[in-house]
Length: 176
Ligand SMILES: CC(C)(COP(=O)(O)OP(=O)(O)OC[C@H]1O[C@@H](n2cnc3c(N)ncnc32)[C@H](O)[C@@H]1OP(=O)(O)O)[C@@H](O)C(=O)NCCC(=O)NCCS
Image (cartoon, rainbow, N blue to C red; front, side, top):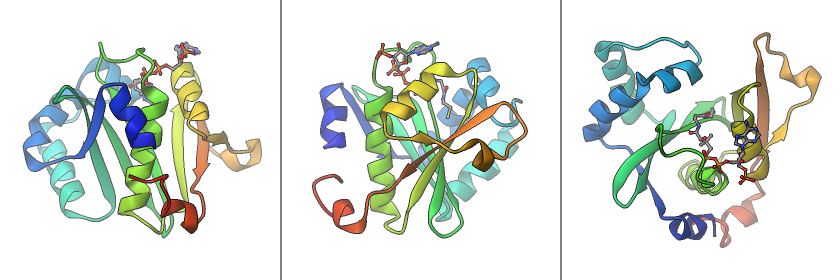
């Protein structure tokens, strides 16, 4: 269902491949994307290369490339946490944001993640509190803010979580 709505808005998702390494390096060092990263600093090619190779080889990270008309325009990443959780990160490159595609993209990406990781129970987004657009799209995609007590983070971020529907739903038409 979510995948169909993605097609309707002209987007598709595919798993990252080794040849995406240079593109992702270029994107990672775009000023707007640096500003949204947790470290808020540029990365070197060596750092990127080591991270990317490990991410692609291992089973703790899912990198999805967002494409419009066959051209890459963004990334959705899931980093595994514990046995049943994951942290989602998402960005569209400058020029591709603000076109009303965020919610469908998040939903379709989450469906990909639960297909790849059937044990997944929750997905969490950690979003800077001043990133209002992002908070809006995650809430529309079904992510709910953790309680103030659960937030337990010192910096200026909000934590929103999506609880994965039960197993019977996972295997129904809700996935691809
Ligand atoms: C987050 C992101 C993927 C959302 O996708 P998008 O296609 O740009 O989002 P949309 O165009 O669907 O915008 C969603 C809504 O936010 C609203 N919005 C935009 N700026 C806003 C603001 N400052 N305050 C409140 N709402 C805002 C839009 O009006 C839109 O609502 P509408 O559909 O009722 O008009 C994209 O903006 C992005 O890549 N941003 C940079 C990276 C980032 O912030 N990542 C999140 C960190 S995990």
